[in-house]
Image (cartoon, rainbow, N blue to C red; front, side, top):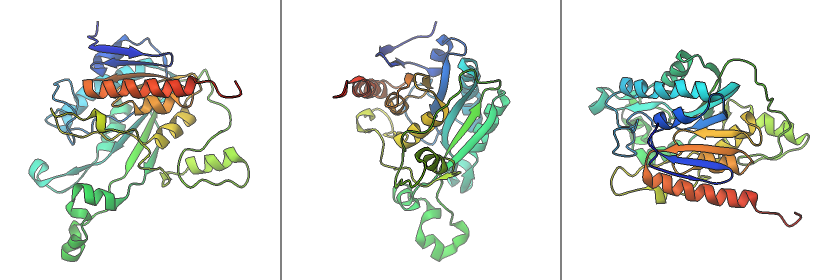
Length: 304
């Protein structure tokens, strides 16, 4: 039996404070309609000081040895024909840590790890990020204009985000059907069939219209004990993915719930949610955010 440090739940959600690799073993086979999450980016950021934290690894090989346990369980709990989407980015390398300045293919490693667990590589979308914001935040050598002037052989483009999606083989017994009824993103206008216009934006291989600031407030999840980093996934991305790949009433799973972004996004469009979160500070904030989202979703309208 997995150790549950804490648990909170509502009518539309369940949240567990514990290790996702242990917690997920308690879920029944083929019980999840869709999974969406942002895993630790190897050791790029420190989220907690727990030895169970996948971000606390010495190498990429150690991270993926740990991560593959979770992938196998994701395959088990997903319904046949359904999907799992992973938010990721390629990793910048450093002279001090890696011996060279460049890019490491974290996205490709994730794809190969899922394929080795018999998932089908279903699709991917590239999410544009402002390189100026990245330069200001990271001071990366390759993004500095002075490096272009000095020696542009060391200059590079910004690093985008990706949503890589994987499908469990076999036929989907519950079709995800019906037209799109809302658009998640920036600058949308339609002139003809609303659902077709939405789909033409979503079908783009590069999403240029994600509102980067449309996230939950991460400030409450930070603690004094460890490195202060939490980057919630944009709600536009969550809404698009849940619209595309889940039905209303489906259970959406996030093994790395953080402050509850995937759960809030899922609940707000009529899905249910199960989340696991190792860090107690994030867990408390996530429970608060999920409770508010559920109250808003279930509140009667004037016409009701």
